[in-house]
Image (cartoon, rainbow, N blue to C red; front, side, top):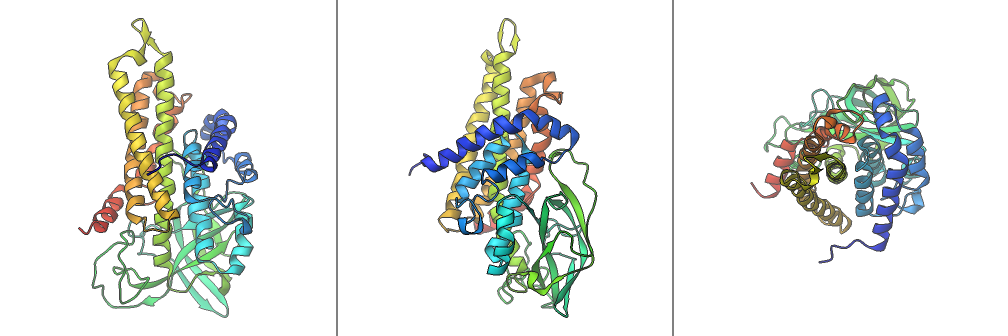
Length: 406
């Protein structure tokens, strides 16, 4: 068993770390304070070929693997979560469905622009009545005369309302209920599928499909950005579809396979969010250690006090354990093995770890940790969403328990 990274993986880690420290760190506090989307940074990420890391070069991607992508997300989050989630949501949620389920025409149309960063991709799953119960989709799409007419709404959607947003892949009900009841209880996020209706949610047995909706489509509107606790420099807002019309050819994959498709996309997305958890925790440790060495009390730096050393040691140990779990999930995906369990474990572990490490970093900073000029204050605000987004901790526990056979 080899725990060392390959030279190629070390190169991408070093490249992204240098970029994050040189280009993002100097402006991260201002972007957060002003709630300004990082257009210039995204453009530079595109020029570095980092906006499409895990996609084939023939479509304009970086030709890398999941581990390379994971390393990039981790290094970005060490410095700023808003930039990291912009890349993460774009890659795992916006671009991945087109690559995995799109036909060749759809791939040729969208992937080059998405992989270059010219356009951002988004994924529209969550609704007011469809969060953890993601199969309870209310948005509907009806097909007539070669067009889908879409009506409904989505919420908490990342990357859909920027000046460079290109499209959103949405889930929509495209057919009536397939059966009167459900023989097997389950959740849209627990991986349970009704064997009588492959691709259908056993609790909400209706036909769900994924459809590409380009920005600018008639009847598609993006609401005002949310006022958030954290991730202030990322774009998050509600979407509405009022008799929105798109061509029949915008259907993503076979009709009725949307439920099965988004379960797979969520599994992939959890690896990216887990990498964000490790990166934020590491960034918090970096800042805490730096401050502890500089801050003096009772005649010596506080890093020499056992109470502070205990916090730093625990943070370091837990981060290393979480990092190995995230890398394992990435390697399982790259090896084309089932990674659902490991991805859920990694996401559960590192989300909680990020919150705990950010809190300890603030504590080590004392009163200064409560001041916005210090990065740990921003890290603390950014951390909590990692236990909620891409499936709450409680959903991860369900996924893990069922994978264990419970």
